[in-house]
Image 1 (cartoon, rainbow, N blue to C red):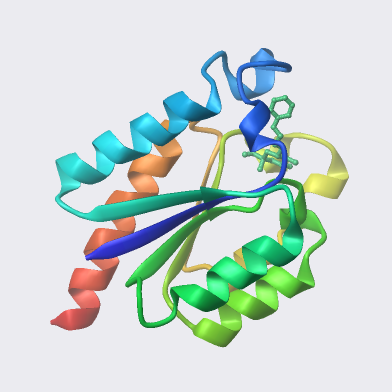
Image 2 (image 1 turned 90 degrees about the horizontal axis):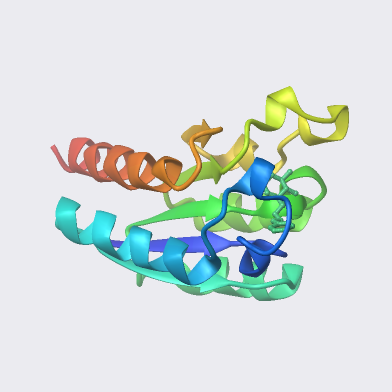
Length: 147
Ligand code: CA2
């Protein structure tokens, strides 16, 4: 089972600013956390981070036929990108949305998630742990789809 983990703009800045919202660990530590969680679950996971909407859309399109599912934190594009929503719908692979923070408990503009409309589940407000839960959920979801 191969899962693509996508992270959107500014997540490469983790640990540098706003630790009260996003924690003190940096992006490299997030990638290490995801690799360890995937290994514990016995699934393969590749991480990709970009600050560019089109690069994320390209990566989603390229996932078809290569990956079984997607875990995605589109970051600020969550709340603006119909292109990412359309790309997720176009490839129709099971996708799970993750947010480090609780987007429903913050500014009103963060309460809308376009990408989430194409996702089977959302984990938010759990910090790095949300990625582990998303991988575990996707593994069970994909196993269920095979039965
Ligand atoms: O909570 C999340 O994971 C978000 O997707 C993070 C995005 C934000 O726009 C979403 O509303 C919620 C922001 C990621 C930027 O991360 C930073 C990291 C360090 C310093 C500043 C921003």
